[in-house]
Structures are given as structure tokens and as C-alpha cells.
Image (spheres, rainbow, N blue to C red):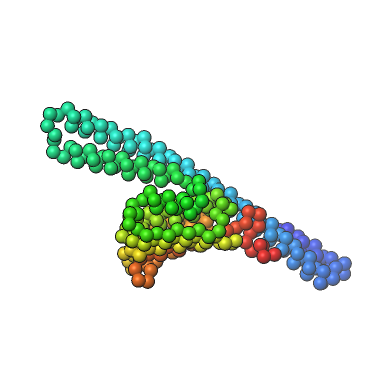
Length: 263
């Protein structure tokens, strides 16, 4: 603002002394406005990228910390309790009712805990998005489910933080389907265009109802991640049954903001 005001005032002074025509003054002011605005947009775009990277690194560090705490504290205590029960069962000449069932519950808890820790540490797909999402399905309880996963476009060209966050959003949508939907058919598609990513995940399950709980931690996490990328997320019931998740994320060029690309 200060720079523009100085330029405008200087031009006005030249105009008063007939050292500058009104047409030239108008061109100077317009060009000055464009140049200053472009520099501001470039700086804002660069700072947005810096903030995204900073938040991403903070998320990674926090997930690693939570994973360590779960492994060292919760996992250690559950494993110790399991060992004590197994030793007590072995030491007794006759089995005690309920001990074997308790041991099995603790073993299941350890398996679930290992899966949870693995999920926390899987921050970014190391292969293509399509292969990573197929691995999520293959490692989940998807027995008997028909599914299709398709990625249109080259995801290797995406910024690392965008690729990681999109993967985590879609992964959470898939987990919700496996955990709650009772679906038999699943379809996930990601379209990567020059200026935008659009993704849909839909199933033929029981749907989310007319009043889904907005405080659901999974949905809240997905919406927060989408907002962090400057995008939007919608979760709706499909016509005929099931749920549809729609994600839209704008892609900003690394060196120029989106409104300057056309120029």
C-alpha cells in the first residue's frame, strides 16, 4: 500500500507539472498495481507452502510420539499381563475357567495395537497412490468385497505434503467403510488435473443416515486435513443406498499462484 501510494503521488506530481500525460500516468499506476499485487501473491503462496510443510512435519512428529507411547506403555503393559496369565495357566495343574479366553482377548488387543501403531507411522505412501490404497484394502477386512481403485494422472508430480494428506484422507474413508458400512461394493477414484485434485469414494452399504454425527473423530480429521490443503470434503448418502465421499483440493504451482497461471 505504501509503495503504491508513493508511486501514485509521484505520478500525480508529474501530471500537475505537465511532465506526464494522463494516459501514461494511468498505465504507470496500472502496471505498478499489477507488479506489487503479483509480488504479494507470490509471497503469500510461498508462505502458505511453508505453513503446510511446518504443519505436516508437526503432524508427523506427533504421530511418531503417539506411536512410541502406545508401543512402550500400553503395548508393554498388555504384553506383560499376557505373559503373567500364560505363566499362571501353565503353573496350575488344571485349567482355570476364563483364563484362556482372557489370554486370547489380550492377544487380539496386541494385534490391534500393532496395526494402530503401523497406521500412525505410515505417513506417506512409498509407492503410487493407487498401489498404496490397494494395499490398505488388501490389509483390511475386505473379504468378499468387490472393489475398484483408479488414479487418473501422475501422482508422483504432486507436492509431498499434498500427496500425503490426500492419501490419509482416502485411507480414513476406506477404513470407515470397512468398519461401519456393511458394504459389498467399493469404488475409489482420484483425478489429478493441472489445477485440482478430485477424489470420490463410494460404497453400497447402509449409509450415514440423515443426521451424521459431526463430532465423529474420523470425519473431523478428514475435514481438517482437507481444509489444511485449502480444499473441501463432503460426505453424503448415495441415492439407492451407501455413502459417497467427495474431496476437492486445489493445486498451487510452486512458483506462481493459481490466478497468474493463465497469464
